[in-house]
Image (tube, rainbow, N blue to C red):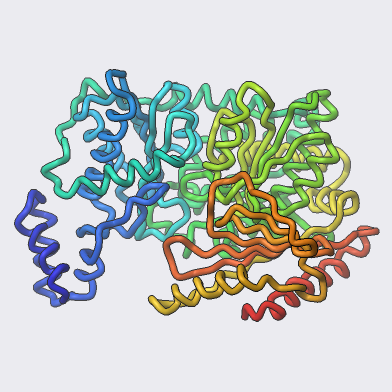
Length: 576
């Protein structure tokens, strides 16, 4: 074992840590479990731009009372420096994961001990409700204890700023500095100040639910389609607290919860990964949907910020829609409904991320609504809303990874509101004697058939990380002149903030925060994006291809052509 790791272990054995923690370390030593000890202590769990995320257990590289407490002390110190001589309050929520409630109490204890007022949800709640609560209570910050859709061994700590959005520059780097300066539990104020903690719950639910219900544009139509058969699963997570009652309050009288996955359980016993992007995670919902001959099946992840859906396709078979497809029908319905309600006045806007389908841009243009593109992450979507507050009206935003945000009262992806408005979209289609899949094909007939794909390439170890750097450097220095037979007309380098017209050489500045992303636009309208992970030796390639769809009957043919296009791009770029 490296000496630095052994020294770190001895610090824990001899420092201000409880006996139970020390006993676990001693047991690992007695068992000769060097690999586990090394992984638990070889580094400090990194407080990144979003907060903490890691495996639960003892050690500096684990989610535990001490790493959570030290992170909270660092955040408390930064809040006090940012708001001198002001009353500071924070909101805290947690999901259904093992230890989430415990970590939430630790976080509340430390904030309260620092003289900070705490609004602590007394039971688990969806992440979007935490975002809402920050602005509702006028808080300066907020924390939700969740690891989103990670496996059961993980937990996390997501930090938010005063607008209810996840933390962005310059606060992100400044907070990281404060957290890293806390090197011992003795620097943490652990003693809970009861007078600084207020428990909240149903009072916030009521206001939040009212805002979600206020998104509805077609209440009469829902009344006509109130018996729409909806299947919903919270995947053992927080969605069970709000999604079924929101759907019922909206007017849907036939909501069927997947009972095997209704009980909150941090072990997620019925799924391998509690992620609605996974076919396996949605299998019980689809099974129930088939049994009931339902119109819609929906699943939310454990902290209810992402939603996956399944509907019957044109062949009558149940099909999972990807994040771009779900967003497409949701965008189309909302823009159409706003237009028909006379709510589009020329100052409305939508937001999407740069790796999400350009179909949303086309739809927005047709409806006379401005479409902004941001880097990946809802903190950037929230940033556009923040900049335009009081000047323009936000309708909705989204990204390809199953996240959508409707209205500006939440500043993070919101599966509760998304479930409500997806159900309304399905009701809209059914009111026209269509399925949601039919509605999606209607969009393709009008705007073009867009299809997206993504591959993630892992290059292990230090050499792998260098290989990914070399791959990006090569693409920057020698952008492909053509990809799969179509000329490359533009390169967007979000790291250098330069857009280059590859036919003329003309360059334009990209007004966006820097990020190591490259994007190539082809002459035929297809798009290829390359985005390395900031934390792992992985690189993701996103593909968006399109073709006209002349008739619904041609759907399968064009679908196959687009699949072939994506396969051709992958082969041409040698990405297998």
